[in-house]
Image (cartoon, rainbow, N blue to C red; front, side, top):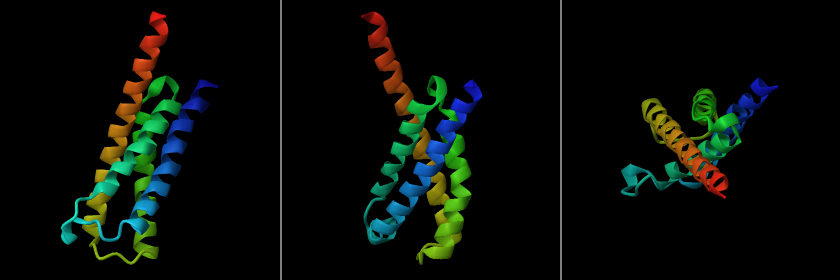
Length: 124
């Protein structure tokens, strides 16, 4: 039964990573470094990592990162097939690797929040 709960974090991060990837790709058309704007859309990838880390058993960081890594090829394929982008394949791949990094950072933030809440509960 415990092994089933571990895959919940992977599945949660997998699905949320895909949703965030497409929402950022569709709604942030002009916010790329070539246009002079910073890539603030990557910060939204903190959300899937943090939520999946909180949902995972014992606040694992590895499971959300695994979910993001599994979602990355699917996002790359779907973005190349259905979205007309001005970026090359290598730029999109680098962008997705950055998204996985931010997702891992979100997982660490989620783990930090869980540890803070756990310490407060144990001191009462």
